[in-house]
Image: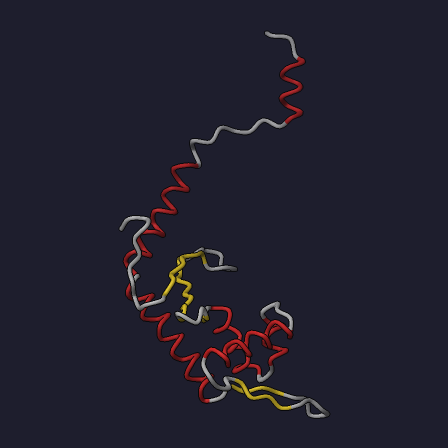
Length: 166
C-alpha cells in the first residue's frame, strides 16, 4: 500500500499506528479517531478513555485525574460529546457529605461500547499490516545501529587536536 493510500475500514476513520506506552516490550497498536462529517465533530481514544474512567470510577474528577487531565477539560469534552450525540452521555449528582458522582447514561454506554467494537474490528482487519509494520520498525532499528560510528565528546576532540602526531 502506498503512503498516500488509506484502507477505509469505515467512512471517517483515521488510523494511527503508535507504540504502546509503559510496556517493557513495545507492541504495535491501532489508535482510532472517528470524524463525523459535516459537523466536524470527532470521537477518539481520549474521549473513550474518559468515558471508561467515569464508568469505572463513578466520578468525572477522578477519571480526569487518572488521565492527567483537569476537571474543566473533562467537562468540556463531555459537553462536546453530548452536543455531537444529541443527548446526555453522563449524569451527575451534586457533591456533599456522601460526595457527588457520575454515571454513564444508556447513550454513553452505547457510545463507549460501539467505539470499542470499532477498535476491535479495525485491529483485526489491520492485524497483518500491523505485524509487517512492526517487524519493519525492528529491522530498521537493528540495521541502523551498527552503522553508527561512536561519537567523540568535545573533550576527546580537543585532546586529539592538542596531541602531537605520532
